[in-house]
Amino acid sequence: MQPETDRQSQPAGATTTAVLRLEFNGAEVQSAATTLQALLLERGLDPTQRAFACAINGKFVPRAHWAAQPLRGNDRIDIVAPVVGG
Image 1 (cartoon, rainbow, N blue to C red):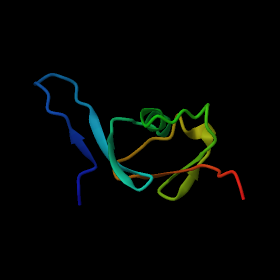
Image 2: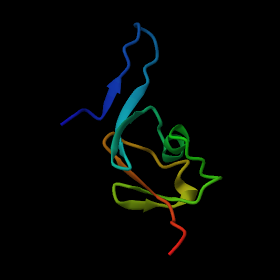
Image 3: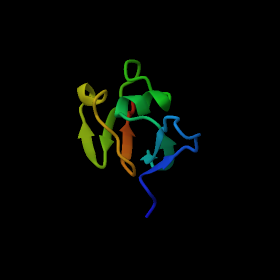
């Protein structure tokens, strides 16, 4: 099993940034985002401009909770968007 986070190599006394390993729509990604909303913005998804829903580890996360929803290493984030047409 891989560790949840990797630490960037930095000189002694410097602050470290945790990098999480996540699964984002089926692809493994690394991110320094600490919340779902930060991850979405980092991945180029603007919640105010697009209609989509999010789930973490198979559980739906209401849009009102995205800014405060913490991420943990190895979380699986799924983004679902409506499809128009028939």
